[in-house]
Length: 588
Image 1 (cartoon, rainbow, N blue to C red):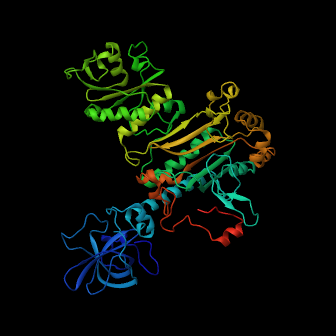
Image 2 (image 1 turned 30 degrees about the horizontal axis):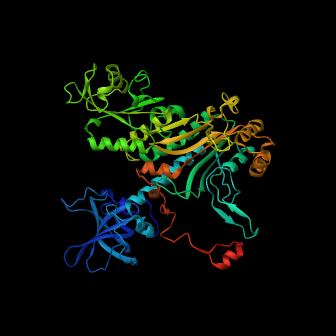
Image 3 (image 1 turned 180 degrees about the horizontal axis):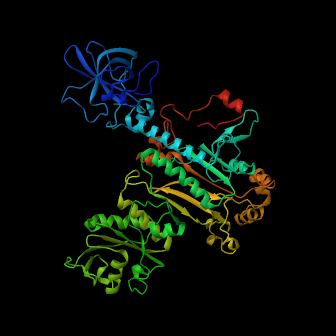
């Protein structure tokens, strides 16, 4: 046994057959008490490592969640009384002496994973919820992953540096939390959305390779993968290319997965943003789902069917999908329309002895669909051939603008697969070559897809003014099982390129100086080529733990409304505190 201290000889979950005959002293919480006659009781003692059965004097008053120390001798359970569901199920602690260290009121819910408890109740009593095996496992898994990440960054020559939490407003787009200054009344700090500018200044300072397990804050609407407060692996390196950064980060996340699971995931797939959109309908593809979108444009190039007369026609094979009911298919059509498509065509694929109303194919299949009769033979054959459909499959098709057709089918691809976030293998993917700009704004200037310090692709930079939406950036995302873990880019370090980007965005010299002057000023003293990345520790831990919300891997999260049931935050400040800060709050 390990983890011995002056109060205990080890942990409950570590007691095993090799300890039979040993005298032990264990500390923990009473998980369950079962009476065995008047003078004997079985007590399940729980600590962070697990549960062990203790045989105690039935006259000792013990209740659920009492904190106790139990001293006794490890012995084998009687034959036939073993519990294979427990790691300690072959042994028990006998001849027990019990010392009550702390009494406890009955907890608001059972401290076990099978209990179905309202989330607000769980968060209000989080200190009890954290005792559950699931929460213990999740937070310890997270710690193992973070430790592996740190080792990987240290091994690759990175230096851990802490950056400020009280910072100046940044240009990254998300709403920031403001902190009023008592010493400079009327002025405010902000809590950092990320250490982006600070880490670029570290590159100017010659640190060469920086990383930090950084706390970041954004005042944005909460959801399953977003909290006000979050933690990320933040890194930056000088004299590197995009591929160098991808290599650094790949090493860290693969090490983390291996440390948690014992198995190293496969090498990380890489694809361009355009390829991800075309094949999966999203820039965060879930590669556990084997199917991909296909281009049906050539199949319907000369079609007379108005439903397929569109700039793009995309198709998706749904293995085994022909079993879906007509009402389910109708709901898919409505779902596609809700996602922005003009419509959705569906085709059940069956063997040649198809049902009435089906149309045959030279490939030996029948298509069952309201549109089957209006398709030509070559169109039916092409639909089956290009999608790779087989009897029993379902084929979905969307004809629309290219991006709409892709995104709608991409969403249906995920919804029909129905894979929970933590199910199946860990499939990472790098998505590269994002557009530099995502749209043209109402003011006629392009809207940046990333922060304005992202380096354009050298091959595209001459189209910055003439065709800005065609310019690719040197930005990249890391995706895991359909979740975006993080983003990064090669940074602009050349003043001439930065000036062109600012001008394209409509940022004047005066505005640039006001917003970014301290960074641009630093660059005048010699900025090395540099690039960086950041990914969410919370999201990584959630996927590795098989959880669908990052709240399950954070010790003290907020609810989706941003409320903390445990402390009641946010709360009003007293009038005297507001006066000291020079802040006035309108009457509610």
